[in-house]
Amino acid sequence: MPETPANGLKKPALLAAGAGALGVVFGDIGTSPLYTFKTVLDITGGHTPQTIMGVISLLIWTLVIVTSVKYAGFAMRIDNDGEGGILALMALLGVKRHKRPLIVAAGSFGAALIYGDGAITPAISVLSALEGLNIATPSLQHDVLPLTVLILLALFALQPMGTARIGRAFGPIMAVWFLTMAVLGLWGIVKHPGILWALNPYYALRYLMHGGSGAFLVLGGVFLCVTGAEALYADMGHFGAGPVKLAWSALVFPSLVLNYAGQGAIVLAGASTQGNIFYRLCPASLTLPLIVLSTAATIIASQSIITGAFSMTRQAIQLGWMTRFKVSQTSEQGYGQIYVGAVNWLLMLVTIGLALGFRKSDNLAAAYGIAVSATMLMTTMLLFIAMREIWKWRTVVCVAVAGVFFIVDASFFASNMMKLPDGGYVPLLLAAVVYGVMYVWHRGILAVAARVSEDPLPVDVFLDDLAHAGVARVPGTAVFLTRAKATTPQVMQWYVKHSKSLHKRVLAVKLEIASVPWVAARDRLSLAEIAPNFWSVTAAYGFMERPDMPALMAQIATHGCPIHPDELTYFAGIEKIVPREDGNGLPRWIRVPFTMLLRNSTRVTDYLRIPANQVVDIGRQISI
Image (cartoon, rainbow, N blue to C red; front, side, top):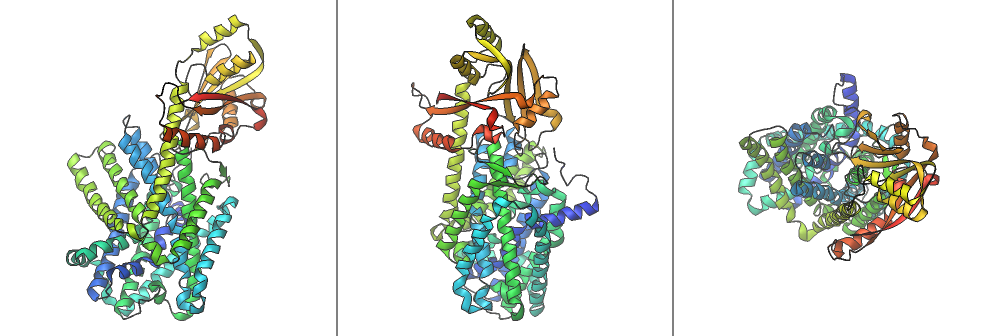
């Protein structure tokens, strides 16, 4: 099991991990200054000093409350064996008590929402970066959209190669990006130092109190400054909480504050608000190099979103909430270096479709934020439960702390909901589709498991029946995958029924996915010879791990079971789903799509990396 980097790191290692986190964790939130302030000003409709001061103060204090306090200060202290994110939190709380449908629903739908806004992030980021060409070289403004599509195509096309090499450059490029944003912000502040008064939360509160309904709508735009905050929690397992917090506090947060303040300062000083305000911080002669750097930063932000989608998909597969996709390891040096082809190409189609449909970052901003704000709201609900059950805080304290976060998150969510007519339905629709797939698959898998577990046949009874029936025992070792423990696998019963034979040595293997991300090698295996030459094997894996059957067999061979991994024959069932005759099965609207998902999912033997020349497939009909 990998060690959590935050534990016991010495200072040089902590700094190195913090630098690495820059390129993976902060890409989304780090590129938000490209479009957030401009979007908010478009919503306000006015550029008075009171409005500018209020908006900048709102941006700064949103970063403080949501990112620094809620995520860095509270959420990152609740980890599941070093892993974070809403799925890891759901799994952690799910083992505290049985049958917690509300927690499961909140966690799974929160994960689906991340896919929804994740499709928008690459499109809005790359578009906003290239829109700097409208200022630097107006003659190229018609090329912004085609260039965006080309960059997105190239980004997704390169994913099968893996991100190990390019990932090494992520940290230094993002460090340059944040330092550049800080310098540009300082340059803007020099032109109107009075903007620093916006650090006082009084200006944010005054704007909200006196801005009427317009101030409420502005919250939807202000929220864009923290759309990547969830990544701090979700990606903490890659680097540890310490390095992520260090990078945020020492570089990312100060750079964002300075840049937003600088943008507000130049507007107060009389700069034009036409086009992208971010690029007006830069001297004209340096605009093109800044566009190149901005585009690189947005590509990195997009890469982080894609990699995060791969990781979350693997977690969902392991937890039984997603159909089995083919997961390819692209690097031996990092477990997080994976590629999921189906997710990559579907995400590409949706992202490019959004870019072509909305055409401008301003239009995409109108659809952006609803899904992320809903995810943050659900995370707050789970944090409240964690405060009570894990930290054992008094209820009144939990209500006081989580209540503040809930009010903030609910306000942002309600404001973002006003975007529904302008495209806000898009991420919600995407999330609904993803959640529908997750729900159907989960219900179907549970129904299949329940069906095959009916009328269990004890192993000793089965073996006695073999002897009485004169079933031939042939040389070799057979491995049967089973969902039941210490009973006869149905696949084996069907095989014996049709072949009238069975190998002399049998292993019944049950795989269990734990509610922790990693299972130590010493805790992986439970092995027992429950009858002569009949071994019951239970192997536990974390939801961040991918089972490897040949590796498991090699481990079994070292635990006293006389097998030769290269001479095994694996038997796997190929299920054909049919409706139950008694009418007590799954509803048709669940059974039919589940059947389609099962038919098109990766074969379990491929997912478990079983050599194809050692597999015998057995077709079986299951009524659910």
